[in-house]
Each structure stands twice: as C-alpha cells, then as structure tokens.
Image (cartoon, rainbow, N blue to C red; front, side):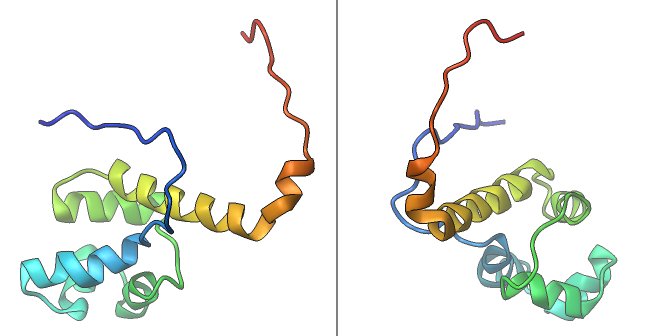
Length: 109
C-alpha cells in the first residue's frame, strides 16, 4: 500500500467536498446510479443526494460505509471532510482569528 502523505500547509484553494468526489468520480467509475449506491451503502437516496450536493457532511458512520464500499477505508473520507470543514471555518472567521493570541505550551504531557 502506498504511503500516505500529510498536508502541513493550508491549501491555496477551497478543498473539494467529498460528496462531489462521490458524484463526479466514484459513481461514474462504478457505472451505478445514486439510488443503487445508496441501497448498497444502506442509506437513503435522499441522504446520499444531500452528501453529493455538499448539503450534508460525511459522518464517521458514513465514512465507514464509504470506506468499505470504495475499498479505501474510512480515514480518507473523514480527512477530506475535515479539510473542507476547516477551510470553511477559517473563511467564516476571517480576521477574527488574528485577534486571538497564540501560546506555545512547553513540556506538554
């Protein structure tokens, strides 16, 4: 299995919502409909549609289902969602974050 690399810098552009990857890459590659995928995943078609439009986040439970479905494990789906959520949060908070002091704790247990 290839080694996974961690991203240590903030991305220059908005990360892709994992639902877009399901919609644009996964389902076409498998040649199945959203209805069929939802049925195989054990979730409602409406829930899958909301995920694919970015209106719903990937939860740990959905990540486990997607990881099994795609054969790549749940971690990748959670990391994709986390990257997207953090980007959105930073964008919403904007300059407010600059007002918060940064402390560097020494000797953390």
